[in-house]
Image (cartoon, rainbow, N blue to C red; front, side, top):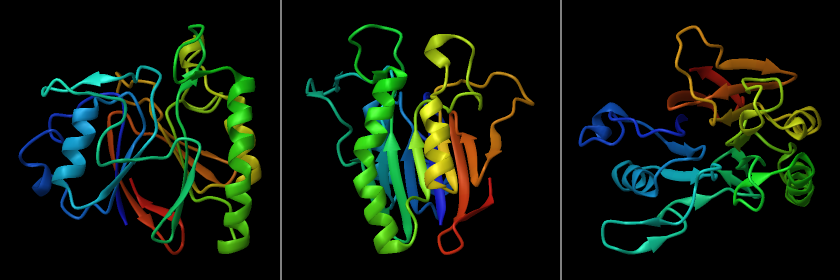
Length: 217
């Protein structure tokens, strides 16, 4: 399975009439947050692949060129607080960032994110019963604490993501949120049984659905 993962910034080569040629063979698109809804809608319209997404901390209702206000990208599937099986791959999504503005949408304290994970547990346990595993790919906006995150509060990662990876052993965690400006920045890190990737702003991933491993990136 070829996965196109997107986050945080509009990529000219994606938002282009040549998208079908450049990204031929993409089977699944994953949005990791802070992306304009028109951008996600364009991708899902142009590529013959389903698009699943989580919210970023800057996501808010957006006014389209038609004048219509939308709160979610149309034609796309939200993964927020859910687990969904796509083919033979189990996805789960937890968007948003560490809370740095009181009352802001898609921002969470460590306790609030832990509560979100707790509400996800029944579906993960059901996955284990049905499919013999809890989860294959964790889709997030923010990184885990100490892995690709920043020292400032808005870009600090969640400790609860480390616990989730230790207990439920996803093979892959995809996130955005932390922008990459310098070559040589580490964007792929192993943690326990999980490969953690910062996909900003675009990443093509070859994923083996049966072996549940990353073949190339």
